[in-house]
Length: 341
Image (cartoon, rainbow, N blue to C red; front, side, top):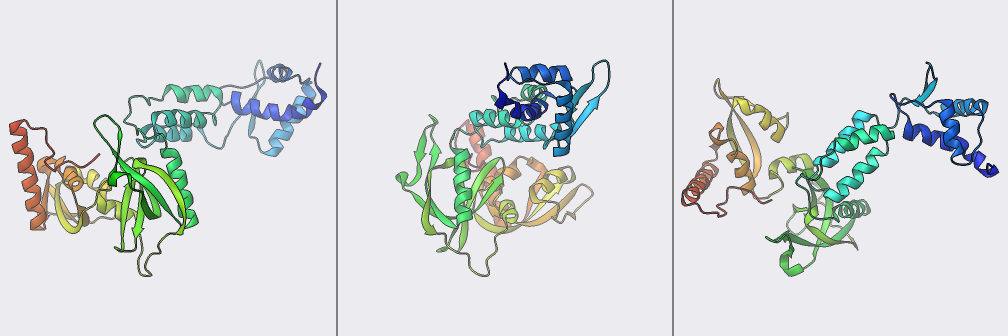
């Protein structure tokens, strides 16, 4: 026998039924609705179902009626369409800073926004296990804490670490806590970075969020920027090349024409391309001279040249010679061409 109070839940169960079990390829008949409601001890007649469907449509549910041998109803549009959910799943799947465990949790939640048949389709397309993923399970909460601190205008403290050969944490500065003024969380080269401001040096410094441990929001307000100081996250990212610092230099680089896509991806579409020959072009830009900068150039081999300044060109040549000599000797040493990871 139906429980009287549950009758009031009928329309809510119907709405959930459409959200979870229907889509353009999977409709629900009136009889199926009645049978499903009976599982919750709710008695429903066809007329009352029709009335409920009309109410749901008035409420804003985009329901479609498909006539045929069996008339079916299904939900046409959702907050996120299937292609949009696929984009979100792909983004989580490919994000190195999100651990494998957290990736599976997020993908499961994203999939719940689709119908169950569509969710199964999304899950079948996911390949998380073999991706390069962060080892830090607390990354998700680190980001949330840092967002809160920035919005509250507060300083934060944390320990900063690297991994050793056994994948164990090795804290920098003997485990001493860093006290910093957080300003921006920046996504660059598949990693999250916290950009902090040091008033003493009147400059910005960055830290990998997945290398931060024990983050605490402090009572002290963060240091204020100088009146004439403006921080541009996009410019900062372009200058630092994967977030590893060094001295800023204006450089002129020459590339073969076939590398134009890589140059635009790295420096943005605003960069001026100067034709130097039928086969090459050059750019002038400001970068931070670092191992990662040289590593980025190294991948293009003879298809890139440093034209200016001479000091940077000479240093790059020396690093190439060091790599060559090390390769000849078969040494596995850090010769300074490749950046940190």
